[in-house]
Image (cartoon, rainbow, N blue to C red):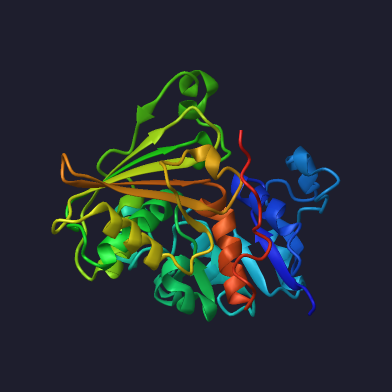
Length: 345
């Protein structure tokens, strides 16, 4: 079988470089074109020196991609920019996996409320499929536009889906407490991400109105068949990558620990990248991989279900999930090219 031709639109950030790192060794895919408007004409390895001798492709302008016969493109573009691309190339033959938040929500009205910007292509929202294979595998297979999940949402959605799908816990409220490494904020320098502000420090941000809250709620509404209410608080860790999410939910009825374990085992029986752990996992347990490690337990003292969910925010929370979606769209094994072993320590 000839290799599928892919393009990476916007490869100068962390997500773009992770896509290159993963796809370089994918046996069924070639990276045909990589774009950058700010670094056009330079080599990708000049922008990301760790790729020297591995990915030395010249970066081209987005205006030239029609010169290439592509099967699929990955959009590693900021929120608000991806929708421009999708609208502009809506009649092109290639399929699209968008890693921004532009097509994850249910409507342009909801998007504009939470992202505080106009959505210029609502038709794309109607056509898109939320790219969580553990929940929407069949829809992903035939999709032309995939909305890749956000990093915080996927760690939370995978942690809660087994509980809410069977109404084991109350859907309102659910407390989601997440900690992330600094790469979650992207590669662009910001004062809040300076070494002096991050090192030896730990802080909460985005209280009450973080834009990922609505993404979690809308997908979990679909899972549970009822309205969910998420109290989400993210925190910034002084580490480079990884997300650890702790979830607290009140059982709808009395439960046993064994029942809880069996529920997760059954729900994720066909999910190759979800690992059900015997003890609470740490972010280094999944570093550099597409795994989501889950640990669920019941606290008889407080009557609460506690779920720990860990992912690498750049892999399962972005590039790895995108490649997983691509594999499904191309009819390949879901795990193809994603067999990385965790980097620990």
